[in-house]
Image 1 (cartoon, rainbow, N blue to C red):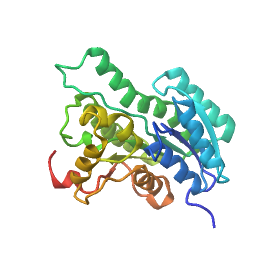
Image 2: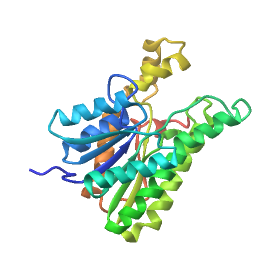
Image 3: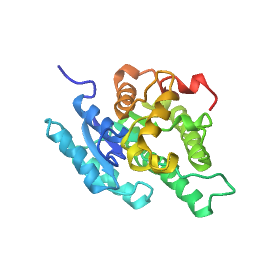
Image 4: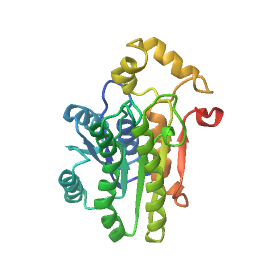
Amino acid sequence: MKGRLQDQTAIITGAGSVGPGWGNGKATAVRFAEEGAKIFAVDINEEAVEETRRLITGSAGVCTSHVADVADTEQVQEIVQKCINEFGRIDILHNNVGGSMPGGPAEMSEETWQAQIDHNLTHVYLMCRYVLPIMEQQEKGVIINISSTSGIRYSGHDHAAYAATKAAIIQLTRSIALQYAKKGIRCNSILPGLMHTPMVEARLANHRTSGDLKKLIEDRNNAVPMGWMGDGRDTANAALFLASDEARFVTATEIIVDGGRSAASPY
């Protein structure tokens, strides 16, 4: 039986993980490969993206890994060209890179603000800029952009630049979707909420609870109506639906993956 993405080529950025477990990009790369996709996995961390490649190829999947900074124009062009050289086409683009820095406009330096714009938003523009002409020639393609529920609601923490960029991704996604709707290209975004990804252990515990990981996890679980956080595999399954032909009539919209939290409270 063929997989839901059989023989399709997918570029997945942020395909590594900052620690053990299932980050969104790593989980998506593995899940797509399980459904027959050929994966061009990209991450700025060589060790992390190599782990993803080994997981996929160790299960008889197809994956090429590539180290790059997706906020750099020349490196993005290289990503696209190498993927075409390797696989001949690009069926799916999954933009997953992102991260937050604390502060509002008064506290945040201009340098940090610009770095957040580049890290969270510019890379989406750049990847789309160089992949869209290829998809247009193919008369088919799917783009999935990872935003966040922080783009539609206050998270309870002051991360103004992160929230602004994630909101911008939502509207950029809609704009691309409508511009290319009659050209066989669909574009949607996914908005994860409180997720238990390796980012929790690697970074958030020190920022939020002075290193008390147990308290952070308990607080985050209690903030979700379902009583527990999802993980990268939940984001990956949403992405799989959007990438597949099952979503052939779905474009210019968002899937919220947050256990009901954004509907339950304004922040």
